[in-house]
Image: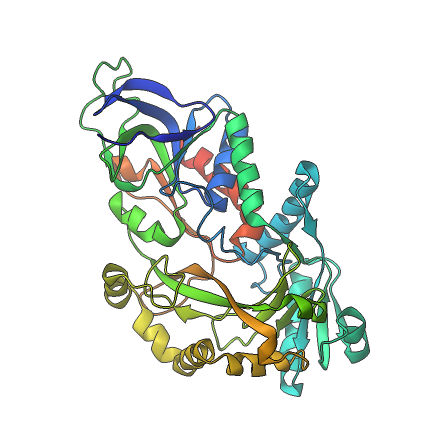
Length: 442
């Protein structure tokens, strides 16, 4: 017997015949593939803008927002890091303001605890000053350069020569925010279908049996159980599987997704007094990631991390998680070999620190000397869906594309929504809703 589709509230579409086993066939005007924070925010934006349309979300897991969203550090970023005039900079600054406004409206708890980006070596100061100028260009609120005495006022246990004070940075539980987006969507009449792992997207060869609508819903989306959903248009926000979902629909699979695992350490509860807000290192433009930092959480814990090491499985949250298909995909189809050759020493150092906690502690002690190896525990991990081009370059900005032909003209793929996608989710969703409206003539 084929398991039933799982519908979470909202309208369940309009019946169009039945699936094998007697389950309803549902048809929608728009289907969003992916129930992470970007997919949920986009579905919410679309249904609020087009309340007359039937809109559904397909999620392969039994619950929503369990992967990148559910493993997020929880930081509401200010937008200081990103290239001026880039979409990342624009959407992060807009998105942070929208997240704060949304949380206030919905009564979702957050803390605007601020962030210090700290230079601990003299050679880092020019980079810190350049970063400060970039933040001003991006319109980040309240930035100021501070000296040692002011660092101590903000973070009594932190040492540093100079820092950027980012008071607008905050923390929130993004899983809670994502579920609130889902609730808004369902209350507006949207449908959420979980346990629906998409494995085919194609144009229908004929109209559904006993249907009077003809080919009004020409796209057929099938899952791994053989169940089908029909729709007019598709938006994919598939995160770690965005390239594969694009390929399923006959669209370009590039840029490919390469999974990077980020491991966190936990500061023991009795030592959490050492950290009040976010403490970040000065980023080095030679390397692709920000570096290990101190992150307070809404539950009062302190996360230390993440590192950035290659994951051997797209959902590989543990060091020994392994998928042959994912590894072959990474080696053959992405530019990982070129990226690794360009950042060999960085990659080796990240692996070494991941294996030997003492090395990570030495790095952390540059900022807070009181921390010892006995003060930390191994913590959770997340996997980042990093888009990589054939030349081994990290794709740093958002990528949206469709395809050609009948099916390509009815699909919008959100191919890369990199960090800070959670912070930017409401701003991204407005842009996706604009793009959908323009492409599909809604």
